[in-house]
Image (spheres, rainbow, N blue to C red):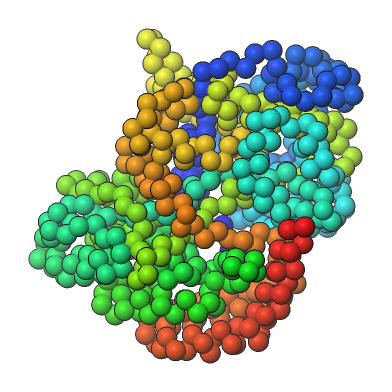
Amino acid sequence: MIKKMKSSAMAALSVAMLASSLVGCSGDKENTGNAAGTENAPTGDSMYSAPFENGKYTTPVTISTVFPISSNMKFKNGENIENNVHTKWAKDTLGIDIKYLWTVSEQNSAYETKLRLMLTSGEKMPDIIAFRGSPSLIADLIDSGQFTNAGELFDKYASDVYKKAMAEEPSVWNPYIRDGKRMGIPILENAYNNDPVMYIREDWLKKLNLKAPTNLTELETVLDAFTNQDPDGNGKNDTTGLSVGFKNNLNTWMSDAGWIFGMFGAMPNQWNKTADNQLVYGSVQPEMKQGLATLQGWMKNGYISSESGLYDETKASEAFTAGKSGIIVGPYWMTGWPIPDLQKNVPTAEYKTYPLPAGPDGTVGRHGTSISTGAVLINKDMEHKDAFFVYQNYLFDNWANPESTTFKDGFAKGYDYDLGPNGEVYREQQSDKIPGGWVDVIRYTLTFDGAIIPNLAMNTLAKLAGGAEPSNQYEKNMAERIPEQIQAAKIVIDQKDSVMPEMFTGAPTETQLSRGDMLTKLEKEILNKIIYEKASVAEFDSFVEKWKLTGGDNMTKEVNEWYQSVQK
């Protein structure tokens, strides 16, 4: 019943590439004389576990770790994860020697499986483990007793930039708190990165003399026209109004249907906070009935495909990119993938990004984006615990920080950028001009994305969309993004008050482990039946009662016990 990360191979690739390009730029103020970025930390021999001068260990220290090799990770010049431009940088710049006990493909959960084998066999753990994914594995690692109070170390060693980034959303620590101790350091992600906006075929609106919908009534007028008035002009009844896919979930990362329920104040497939500071499971709330009735009507009228319940997120998007549906809802980065396929398939097609429409009482609701999807655990027996912070401080103070020019063009010349004869910068889009091609070396870093200040990227794009001139190098690089993406980001920020965030971020509870799969199956079966009109909306109430009696009430109790524990 926990809301899982919703991804496909292509989406993971797109998000990763876009997130990297959004944060992998920096500004115009040189950070000199302190490469480690610890200018605000205590000074003196007691600060570091080994001799340290000018931001670098004078005698190299070692960080041992393990690493997942993702499918989108590429190498060049005969390099590999153990020996590459990143490991050389860490040693030359910081005096840190990174040693990998093992590496494994990230496919088929191999990384998680190998970590679990280490855990169950009692094998010695590395100095640090960085992991994104299963909350249950992180919980088991923490509960093994092999890792230290990371929060104390963070308070002592983290730079101001790193601390300010983490402070943007203090609740990111919640999944890793045990008895008041912060046992894992959250790996930060870009805020709002997967929050949805609405993409509409602008040429269809013009052809049918329609305006973009701002509310449910106007939306249904557009859906009906896109479905029944031959917007593609081929004389066939072969278009639908909206692309959605709910094979996996109603509330998902692309081809999303969660916003439909958000118009009525509901958000399925996640835990939401009530006015009295309690957590409730969205899929069983009374407001769901209006959203189900709406989707049922849209299915009956042909506004959505009869295959929607069989489509995953990517499959559902194909109707839009093939020119056979008029609306799709998903993240702002869809302007980079897969929407460009629309122009390839229908060269005359035009699309535009719009805000999500409001429900009957003016409500707009959408899911949010977690700004942390994993953590770094630090072995209690690690000899040089400060070394991780020397490493990560440098990246926050220079890679993520827009006021630094250390990584003005990218991480490493000849890898993720190169320079032309007149100083022009070649990046991913000009990969053919970089000897050996473009390689995203920031993927090699210990936390997979270098360092991210959560709100920086989207707020910068929104600022640029509002007409502001770039004021530093970071903003200049961001301004190079396509106009449609910049505008989509502004819409995301403009509607940020409509976010309904997932509030349960803890390890799976006892009931979730024992009955979660069964309850999820029950939920999908009845909600799909209602949407396909094989069951009446009235049967939702019977489903809710069954859900509660077969574990839902116990699960709700456990979730709230966790939530109250992290509020203290």
